[in-house]
Image (cartoon, rainbow, N blue to C red):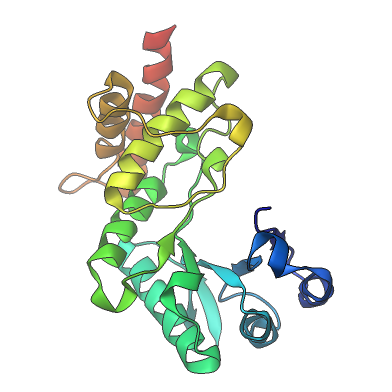
Length: 227
């Protein structure tokens, strides 16, 4: 008795799934996902409108002159979210509370491009935008701990949830068997992760790559200390 989330790049898959889905049991279905690079995007949007589903929108890429490009700044991700919300409003009259924006979440241990910070900063910009009030922000949480020693994956995901919920996250794709939950703001692991991410912000005259490698080293140092 919970909504099902259909996750497939093919429009025909979603069409068949939605034809057989009964929203009276679990509520409106969720389509994962809408993205600027998605083939037959307009047809996918029309399915969201016809079946009144929720939609996960990827803010990690945006429209540019008839094509799509990856977002590399929080401002780009914010613009991508605005563009998609405006498109859903105009084409199918979709309310903000049926839209879940995913700014993207890379594996933190291999994030040398500052993408974790980009996502957190994008959340803050989205939450400050009155035109985006009421929409939801979601990430694929298990991506965050990929490549990290197994025993530390749950705790580091929980530490991220603390930082992300403070930035505006209110939903996440998670493994419920791991009992995901934010930690207390003063939990030492939260402080360590916050410091590691802050170390990944470039200083004057420094490249993102240099800062990114420093961030990766700081993240891995957390687990060395724990051991």
